[in-house]
Length: 72
Image (cartoon, rainbow, N blue to C red; front, side):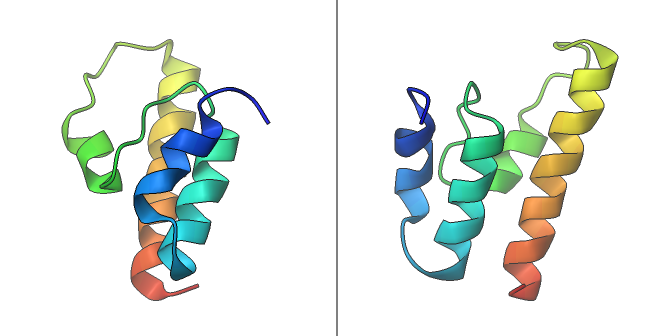
């Protein structure tokens, strides 16, 4: 596991939300995801990444939020 992935998953370490958060942290090990994934979207500065990375990042975070909300 890359450095930072285990600490990114720590805020929501239990249950389904913790699992989804951990999976996202493993996919995005260099990102500081924080406790609330919605904050990642709200606080994200458009144009701060190359376009293809930006689209992938935003899609992955939104997908994780949707999975947590739906319980799947």
